[in-house]
Amino acid sequence: MRTINFLIKPASSLCNLRCRYCFYADEAANRSCASMGVMRMETATELIRSAYREIEPGGMVSFAFQGGEPTMASLDFFRFFTETARKEAPDGVRLTFSIQTNGTLLNEEWAGFFHDENFLVGLSLDGFKELHNAHRIDADGKATWNRLCRSVELLKKHRVEMNALCVVTKQCARSPRKAYETLKKLGFQYLQFIACLDPIGQERGQMPWSLTPEDYGKFLCQLFDLWYQDWEKGAYHSVRLFDDYIHLLLGDGGASTCATCGQCGAYFVVEGDGSVYPCDFYVLDEWKAGRIGEQSLSEIAQGDVFRRFLAWGSEKPDECAGCPWRILCNGGCKNDWVISGSAHNYYCASFKMLFSHAGERMRQIARREWEFRRAQFPENTKLNHRNRS
Image 1 (cartoon, rainbow, N blue to C red):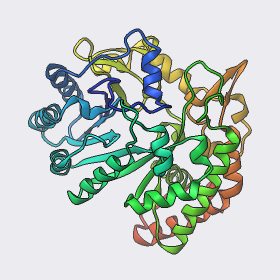
Image 2 (tube, rainbow, N blue to C red):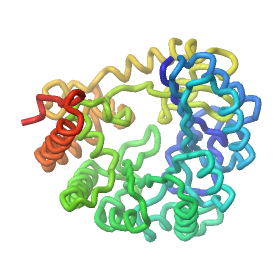
Image 3 (tube, rainbow, N blue to C red):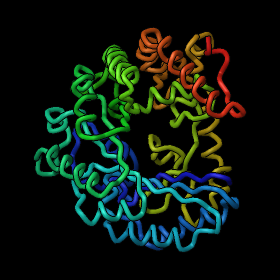
């Protein structure tokens, strides 16, 4: 394997918050064991070694940590993990570390550790104070925005690379400008906005925070306008979804999410007990593919569960076949598919609304980027010619 990507849940579904819409708490409640507990050091060591047994010379291993709340595994766990990973890494193999956290448990020690180990830290939040405190409460029902902001300042003080992951609820969708401007004011250069998920097995759109296709479409259009205005002014801030669309138009292979590139199975999800799954949205009993230490990564990747999952992911809703925007949408994430006879992407209308509203400006940005690359690196320039004119 040339590249191995892990999404590790070192504290399983354990969390110090009680976010009202938490998708992983819902996912955990829909399997036979809600929490696999905190990962043992022996399991962490075997996970690391399983990657090194299969990584090719000069390859890369990415260790991303998520939850639940991963910092509940303790700073000692993370120190052990990074020390072991670096000590045992084969010569020439590159390592990357990242973590997605609610930020409320961070302190000077954590921030110093993230800096020293070159972690990318993603902070999960709702766009601005009122929204955040309405949905992201702790186990005692208390607001958490101020704790998050203190952590942001700590990470900036220690020069830790960070980004923001903002959950788009119905309420957030009504205030795209406030969310975008608040995140910029906090100092985030890299932003990711993800649609809030409804509970597994329930009809979409029934919860107080549920995001409808119309809500999401309007939000994306307004957010794009704000993002484009900054780009025009030379005050660019990265919005991951929009960046991915530009990469797709350029044809440079830079799309960074499964949903935008239309391919599942890009990583191994490893739960606290070492069990392995093909996707964070499907850490459910039926999709358990093996366990670290019991099968090799190759055996897991080539096993029945991964093969079924990849085959399913290669399918697309019938409505995609004649869609002019397929090259950008790629059918979207299959976790958003509604199966009623044939599959339908719940947010299909949202993305069509966005592409109709912003498609020409996306092409404009892609053309400018291509021209810049051609001037700087004429021998390496590549552009998707179907979308250049």
